[in-house]
Image (tube, rainbow, N blue to C red):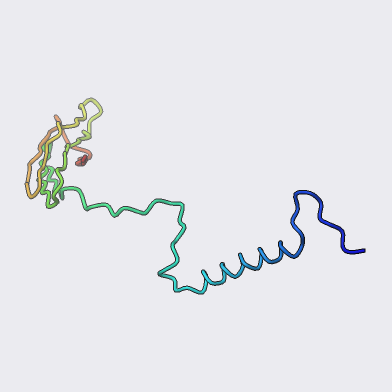
Amino acid sequence: MGPNPPPPGRTPRGRHTEATAAVLAGLALLLALPGETVPRLDPRPAARAEAPFGAECRLRTEGPRTVADCHNPYPETDRLRLHLECARWWDVDSDGAAVAAGPARTVRLDGRCWQEVRAAWVSHQR
């Protein structure tokens, strides 16, 4: 008597081995190719380089008054706001109105407290 036939739904051993050998040969050929021709299968999206953004600001504080001179060297408009934190507890902190600094433009922002300024900074928004 010869070998037993495979159960229904299964392939005979000879065919299964031939199919596996063909798949392995294809993978070996793919791995032997130079790195530039093999596509990268990276699930993450390609990182987009962000364009530089944000005006450069110089702050001057003298007593209760603060002045910020900001220059935007980039092609995108920067919306700037001056924020002041006053030193005295009863003095009201302030957030200035947004001022648009277009490309290659310089703007001046100013603000004041009743007494001394504890901290001053400029925020940027696209």
